[in-house]
Amino acid sequence: MTDLDIREETTATVQDRRFWRRSRGSEDEAGRSAVSWGDRKDPRVRWTLRVAQLLVLAGLVVAAVFPIVWLAKASISTTGDLIRDPLAWWPSGIDLSNYDVVWNELGIAKYLLNTLWLALGSAAVTLVLCVTGAYCLSILRPRWGAVVYWAVLATLFIPGVISLVPLYLTVLDLPGLGISLLNTMWAVWLPAGASAFSLVLAKRFFDSIPRELVEAARIDGAGPVRVLWSVVIPLSRPILSVLALLACVSAYKEYLWPLLVLQDPNVQPISVALPRVEPSLEYSAMMAALFLSLIIPIVLFLIFQRQFLRSVGMANGIKG
Image (cartoon, rainbow, N blue to C red; front, side, top):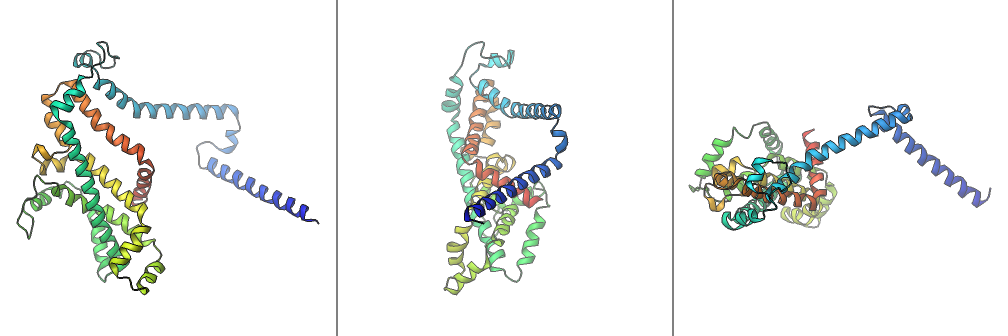
């Protein structure tokens, strides 16, 4: 047998294996679906399934996109048009003065900056507290680490509403310092950073780091801080981006806790400020303010959609 015959036989064998894997994967996928592989060969079943999938997809798109489109339309409509016919397309023309009222008279830029500052600070505090805590439990492994870890897990089963009163009293009179954190961003940053879910997520990721790398760094003379900064953090960039994104999203949509601790209008985020100023705004101007507060997270999602989807996957893995 010549070399050419051997190469042709090898190529044919590889192609047969690839075809077998693809066919097996298709059969396994069809076996897990509602329609079997044999039924899919029937043109009527196949086209019925495709039409049903398109209808479901169209329904999901309409349910997700229509509220955003309507809010964008309402933000440049007049109040009279919204009251007479909410679904009409600008019978009195486009009114851009709503954004002028919201931006200049309401000063929504100040509330958006407060929200941004609140989200970034929550992300920073979350990273500092959860990364150091997870590093201590996963890499340093103190003797009492298992007890602390199970205590942290136990807090996940406590509803957040139950801890509102003790947490508020703690912020009102900080133990050991005797100062009040009300009307300061620290009143939101510190509780947001003490996230048991983020700590567990970081610890699970740190557990997957090879111990050989940590031991090699210790043999080279690196201390605990150097190991954290030079070994663990560079290897943990994916989970760090996930934790920061989850903290930002949680801080942006939080309403009840900022309402309790940020009573000064000058430091309130957009989620607290809009319900407070709603009685003094016209209906159309309120729609413009809502659209401005909505478009920011949408743009951030489009920019960081890969990290966001990764965070959702990791969150489902932890909860599962």
